[in-house]
Image (cartoon, rainbow, N blue to C red):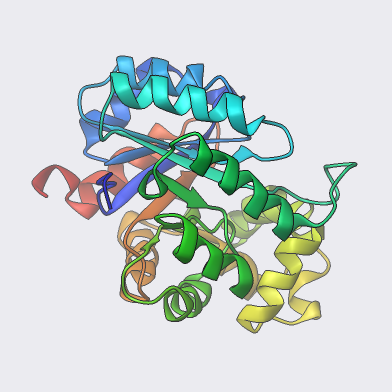
Length: 278
């Protein structure tokens, strides 16, 4: 891997990111800041975050292939990578059929997009794919540095590592909230995933492959599914859940702190994880 992500990073939607937030993430010791929510092809936000920090890696999680022209993305990649070598990872994905009118032949679209990036000289070791199922996981291992799965559990991480093999990067996203009351944690979790993500066919298929049932997915999600998708509890409990991904074969975990004040979660987790001591 040409880009060193560190063991833990932070996932945040592009529209919620500021340069001050990026500096705080770096100061806490997180290795990578993931720019979520389909950032545009110009990648200006990535450049701004890198300009504002010294060593933090910035990764996209993810650039949507339907919405961002491959040639423009390639030109943007070269601009950003030349300015900040070794600090940018380009995450790409295909999105969801519920959100894209022209969603057709997704696998073939991904292959064609990667071929255009290849032709434009974007190095494969600077790319990752938002991969969930076996076919795209294999593609991520063959054509990029690895995979950045979203809305998964350590069950998926273990399955993904078996498919990827020993070499490729595996960097799952994990939602967290520091709430010790289980009922409150599940309420927040259902609001975050149960009435939106669990209705999307790609995520439903992925979770069913993990071994969850239709009953787990319906009605906002069963308690045990919500507990797995949105870790809640005291810092020690949450960090144990994050470490479970590493134990299952992940190289890096992207921490997605829920709530209006993510730093209220990220600070104590950084201390519990000992990030400044690494």
